[in-house]
Every structure is written in structure tokens, then in C-alpha cells.
Image 1 (cartoon, rainbow over the protein chains, first blue to last red):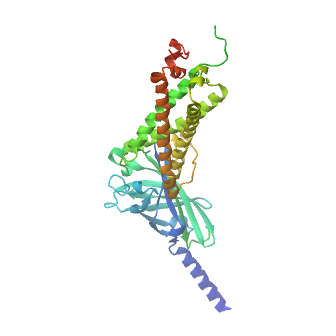
Image 2 (image 1 turned 60 degrees about the vertical axis):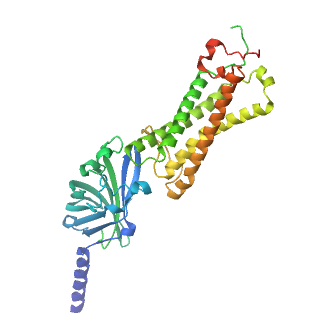
Image 3 (image 1 turned 90 degrees about the vertical axis):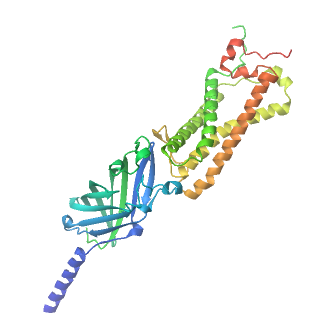
Length: 187
Length: 197
């Protein structure tokens, strides 16, 4: 009998250890899309390369830590002549600021399957605080965290000088993300 | 009214307005389209492209309106004098040119709109009214469609030149006053077809 108790205790320890372990981002099933408005026309782009270090325990979301990086050189609107402009200093200035990053400061559960992530977003040498609502869903071993937020591009000087005119390109840029994670415990 | 004939001699004021507004827009669009195609990516280019799209969609709307108007308001027939005087092939060619002009006034904006959709830039009329995409966003498809906008626009330009040349020939070579049917100031001088001296 004793051996069973030990075994089950060991199992429990293993399970809870698994829940505490870092979760992994599955890039192929994830996406980050941004929508800017050019003279009233919504234009969709995406970042093709990004990575995250995520430690998320659904049982204790407030202990979570999320660090995110996006390779700005991977920004694409799917239009070669536009994509060639994006790394230039006036837009992302990729040679000087190759990555955008987000680091969480607080995570809060607001409803079952819903959390709010507070943190700091840094792009092009400027930082802004963000509050991002995230919807969590699970299918098999994959947990999907999806949400969207709006940022002011001029706060990061994305589209400088002649492009700063918000009647041409709106200040508001919507960012939509869908992040597939493995190793998240049951919601 | 001494003339009680139901046969209209001139186009209605509405038809004239729609015709000359379209003419102005088409001339501007052809020039703008030619100019803007190779501009570098600047806010100026973005502005011109959007103006071009707004004006192009306006031509499409005007043309639909014109066809509806034409359908409900009979345009003046060629005066009997000219029916006799004009070779049949010229009358057929004139009719064909008009059909082709109407056709291209619809087709050129539609291809432009389709190209814009495929390129990933939806058309938002005057920056206010979002129009549905005619094609899904697809780079290869966009490249396939793009040259046809130019081909159709050049054809339209050629037909406009032919149409204009024919009108001017009536006015200055034949001196038959036919152009007054569409000339807003024509009413003052009367719209009668001048008999040949």
C-alpha cells in the first residue's frame, strides 16, 4: 500500500511541476496582425517572426510572466514595394531597433478563460504601458491566447516626418494576435 | 410651342450634365493614372492613388446613372437630314463606338477596383464608404489583373479621341450643328440641324 502512496505523491509532484514549467510558443500556429488605416482604407500587415517566454499557470494567473519579442524586419503588408519601406528609419528603423518587446507586469483573471495582461510595450526606443485583454481557449494540448489592442503609432514615431500626417495614415493601429501555446495546464 | 413633335432634338439637361461630368473625370483620370503609376512611395502618391480610385468609382456610378437615364429618357435620334447624308457604315461605327464607350466606362473602373482589392487595398469611397472587395487579396492575382486596367483604359482613351474627333468633324467640317445636341449652350442658337448650303 505504501508504495502506491509514494507513487501517487510522485505523480502529483510531477503534474504540478509540469504546470509550473515554462510554456512554449508554437510559432507556426500563431500570428500577429496589425491593421493601419490609410486614407480610411484598412490595410492589414503581419509580423512573421516573433518569440515569447511565457510562464502561465491557469490556476494562479497572477503569478504569470510574459515576455515577448517581435522581429521588426519581418513586418510585411504583402506588397513588395511597401515592405521595402518598412525597415527604413522613418518607419521601424530596423538597423537601430531590430526588435519590439513586451514585458508583463501584472496578469489578472477577469472571467473564466479571460485574463488581462498589463505590461510595457517598447518599439523604436519608446515605451508605453498597455492593458491587453486575452481570451484563452484549449483544444487538445494546444492553448490559444487571442486578443487585440490599439496603439498610437506616433507615440513610437512609427511613420515619421512626412508620414506623421494622421489624415494620410491614422494614428491608431490595431494589433491582433493569436498565440498557440503548448504546456499550459487545464483552464 | 410651335413644335409639338415628341421626337427629342437634344439631350436632356441631366444627360448633358452627366456626360460632361464624366468627360471631365475621364480626362483627369487618364492623365492622373499615367502620371502616378511610377511615383515613389510617398504620402503624395498615396493621396493621388486614393483620389484616382474615388474618381474612378464615381465614373462607374455616373455611367450606371447615365444608362438608367438613357433607358428612361429617349436620346435624340440622328436627324433625318443626316441619316440620308451619312454612309451606313459610319452610322454603324458611331453606334458601336457609343456602346463600346459605355462598356469601357464600366469595365475600366471595375478592373481597377478588382486590382485594388487583390492588391490588399480595399476601396473606401471618398474615405468614408467602404466598398466590398471584388477579388480576394492575392498578390499573383493582382499582378494578373493589373495590366488589363491599363489596356482597357488606353482603349477607352482611344475611343474618347475617336468620339471627340467625330464630334469636331460634325461641328467644323460638316458644319451640321449635330454637336449642339450635347452642347449646353446650344439651346440659345437653336438645335436645328443646318441644311447644307
